[in-house]
Length: 294
Length: 292
Image (cartoon, rainbow over all chains, first blue to last red; front, side, top):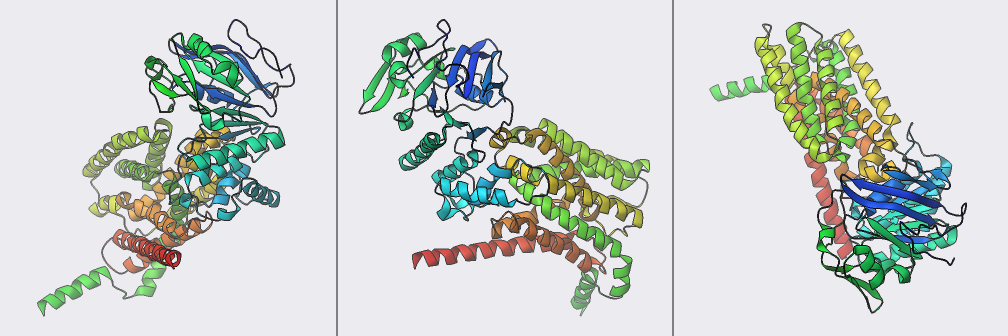
């Protein structure tokens, strides 16, 4: 794919021809009170594409994700999954949440956590069908969790739990994997493991990945495109096109420097105001500061 | 000599197995009611633990007490009054307290109001004082047949209801965000759970009293979780522990002249204590194995 990935309100252009995109955002706007999170947002995500959603705290990353999940109404515009407007609880989307450690005393083993992805939404007498049991086994193998499949979830490390959450999200062969800071509070080795798992899956199964993160570095070499949200505006394009001093300076409306420090991208000079006065009602992710990772 | 006689008195107040067979027949309805309560208390307790709602159980039971006290005063059926009080509290807590933080403050607001209302009604009630205390601390009521019918009916509703929403409720209890993204109607499931919890509390109040409901709806599940992490074993153990507590409590209390609740709470507490000891012992053994 080539072409002008750089899009904004005035030069709206989707990057994929109609019919090819898994997820398509058209002229979407959202704000809370008098504050605009983003306006005129256009984005098309192709099968197998890995798109990172970046931006400072309060820029609407989490709200974007909730909108894709159908849990947040847009002020205007539309988000479509395979050409139909998104709706709540759509099982074509696999959702990987932030790592929240499951404590001991949760009556659940690793395989049961995976099983929730397979039939956790089903009402009725809780007896698992044979086909579903086999599906659970395949998912456990797919994420390399065989060794601890029968261990209590509460006894596993954050990284192991997160692998199980990936398995849970893959249950219905989703066309879109939606990840909300899935690497948060994992150590480097597990960050690597989980992001490679997500990357391998999209290469083999052709599902799109939308990956919300405050730090692009752990997935920088996997990312096809980034969507950068800031100050009520956005930029979309390849990392080379967007993570540049001139582009981010224009986006933030204030001088911002992007440094490449040994392969890591560091953004300096993000205005402090961006990290305060946010009225998003959902938790946003911490890690503010004048100098921060992109 | 005198001390010994006093001891003997106390003992026969606590445990008296004279005419046990006749009493057993007389109170067989209570025992059946207790067994039903054990089953649903053990089952629903697993979710009370997972959803961190022990405080909500306590709050609901105080409003259940208020409902029963109002019913007693105006001459309505006490069980019905307690069910209405329970359901009102459960639904209020469910609707207003979707978030954990809101929930605790709502319960804290509701609970003293319910207790106060209940105490007012009892103070105004001209009848026997045994009835009054029974609502708070439990009683061996000679459960009559229509009442037993009520309890059984509600027990079946709660057990079947729980089974039907078991998986979505488990998912929602563990991870509401992911569950919603995967198609679980979280709000509907939560409200359904609160209604079932309200019903379970209402029948518990009849047997162990409003102040001691936790001993059946929380303690057995808390004990079971100490022993296993299997989603099948934990509910089974929890039901067994609750059954042992309530049926065992009734059987021990039969001949004595004190209320049933101290027996139930003591057995349930003892089971919990043993489970914790077993857990500690197991962990020690695992560490020894790991070190070896």
